[in-house]
Picture 1: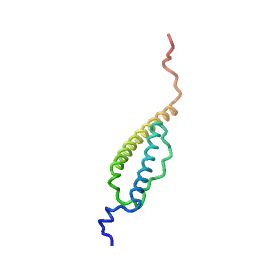
Picture 2: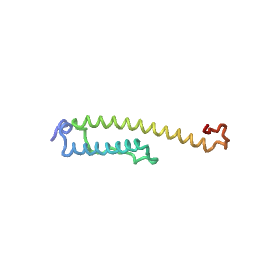
Picture 3: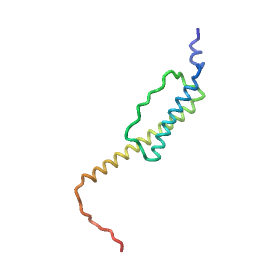
Picture 4: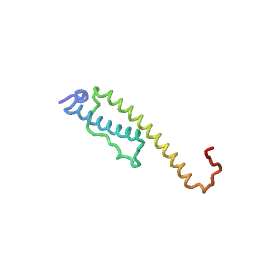
Length: 113
């Protein structure tokens, strides 16, 4: 019978590879959102909700720095998405205000001298 310590500290076959694949998938998702933010092309439809992979076991120590860096990127991207959403709401309110404003005649007319 295997001791509990061996199960926690001894990686199963494919354990590191499964974590590498999970981190790579998350990195691709973050890169996609970073790219969309850079192009100012945020989709109106949210992506499918993320569900964590099952059966990965504890994070291998060799991947801890990579996971921390990914978490930092996710937090930064979340902040930037929230800012972009707030800006989009302000623009939408301003545009709506222009549509509902009564027709007005100009007060000043700029002409070349």
